[in-house]
Amino acid sequence: MKIKADESVCIGAGMCALTVPAVFDQSEEEGTVVLLQEAPPQDLEEAVRRAVTLCPSGAISVE
Amino acid sequence: MSELTMPTTRQRPLDPPEQLTELRQHGALHRMTYADGHQGWLVTGYAAARAVLASPHFSNLTDKQHPPIKAARMNLSDKGKAKLPPGFFLRMDEPEHTRFRKLLTGQFTVRRMKLLEPRIAEIVGERLDAMEAAGGPVDLVQEFALPIPSLVICELLGVPYEDRSEFQQDTKVLASLETAADDALAALGRISAFMYGLIQRKRAEPGDDLISGLVETGELNDEELTGVALLLLIAGHETTANMLGLGTYALLTNPDQLAAMRDDPSAVDNGVEELMRFLTIIHLGPIRTALRDVEIEGVTIEAGQTVTLHLPTANRDPSRFPGGDELDLARPAGGHLTFGHGIHQCLGQQLARAEMRIAFPALLRRLPGLRLAVTPEEVPMRSDMSIYGVHRLPVTW
Image 1 (cartoon, rainbow over the protein chains, first blue to last red):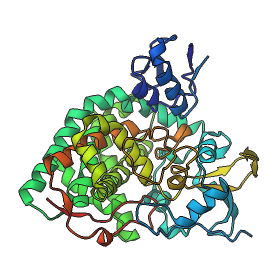
Image 2 (image 1 turned 90 degrees about the vertical axis):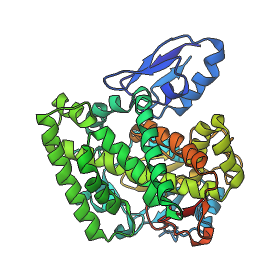
Image 3 (image 1 turned 30 degrees about the vertical axis):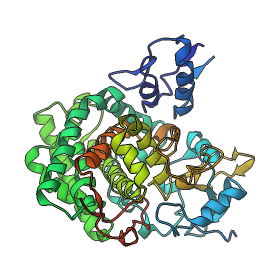
Image 4 (image 1 turned 120 degrees about the horizontal axis):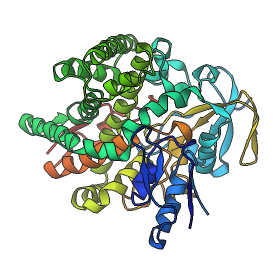
C-alpha cells in the first residue's frame, strides 16, 4: 500500500491522526496532514483505509 | 408544489420524526416546500447527505439559503447573523472560508487537544465536587453540561479567571432556549463587546492562549477576531453542552449502555461516537444551496435550489448503520455525520471528543447511583431548536 496526502485540500479535521497516529500527524502551524510513513506495515492497512473514508476533505488516498 | 414541509415533531424523544424515517425508505432525496414557498430538497439518506457536504458546488452562505422552517425558530447563529461581525467563517464559501480556518486548525489538532486533557479533567472534577457538596437533586444541565464546555472555552481562549462568572452567565443565557430572542441578542452583544475588549488586552499583553496566538499572526483585524472568537464560543458551547445533557439522559434510560460507559474504559471512545451518531443533536440542517446543477444519486438539484440535510435520519440509514435505531456503544460508529463532512466539518471536533470522553465516565464513576429525579417523560426536550437536547435534566444519586 502506498499513501498519498494532499495538504492543499486538507482542512485539519484530524481524523487521520486520531485514527492511525503511527502513520498520520498534523503540522504544528496549520494542523494539516503530515505523512509519517508512505508505505505502512500490513497490520495498519485496514486502519489507513478507515482513515481515508473518514477524511472529510478527500486529502488522503491509497494505491 | 410539494406537499412535504419540514417535519419537526418527534414521537419518541430520542428518535427522529417518524415521517422522516418513512421517507428515507422511499429514497434519499425528497422535494420539499420551504417556509418562504421555495421548492427545494430534503435529504434523508446517508450517502446523499455525505455527497452534498463533500461537493464544492454547494454554498453555505446564509443569503443564498431559503429557510426550511420559520426563522424565529432557527438557531442562535442564524437569529443573530445580522449582528455578527465579520469572521464568522462557518457561513463563508471558498476561498474566504479557508483563509480563516487555516489560521485556527493548528490550534485544534489531536496533539493540542491531548495537552488540554488534564485541564479538562480538572474542570470536570471541580463540577462534580460542587454537585456532591450541594447534594441532589440538581439540574445536570446547569451544574454540569453547560459549565464544562464554557469553562473549557474560557481556558482555550484565555478568558481571565476574574471574568469567567460574568462570561458564563451570558453564555448560559445565550445557550438556553428559554431565553427570549431580545435577551439572547443582548447577551450576544455583551459577549461581543467582552471579546473585543479581550482582544485589545491580549494585544497589549499576549499570553499562551488561542486569541493571543491569532492576534500574533497579524492576519485578522479586531472585528474579524471578534467574529472568530464568537463562532468558537457558540459552536463549542451549545453543541457539547447538549451532547452532555442528552447523552446522560440516553444513558440513564438505557442502563446496559450506561454500565458499559461506566465500567469498561475500552468502550468509552467508540461509545462517545455512538452517542453522537444515535443522538445527532444537529437536527435542523445543515443547509446548502446549489451553485450550479448538481447530480446526486441520479437526481438533479438545480442551481439556486436549497437542500436541507436531516442528519439524525441519515445517521440511522440502515445501509450505512444496520440496526441504527438501537443505541449500542459497541457498534462501529465512526463515519457518522454529526460533525458534518467536507470543508466545514467541525473544527473543534477533537476538543468535543476529549470533553465527552472525560466527562461521561467521570460523572458515572463519581456518582454511581446517578438517576433521574423525575420520570423520563417529564424531561423537557429542545424539540424546536436546531440543536436538540434537554432543557433541564433533574438528577439525584
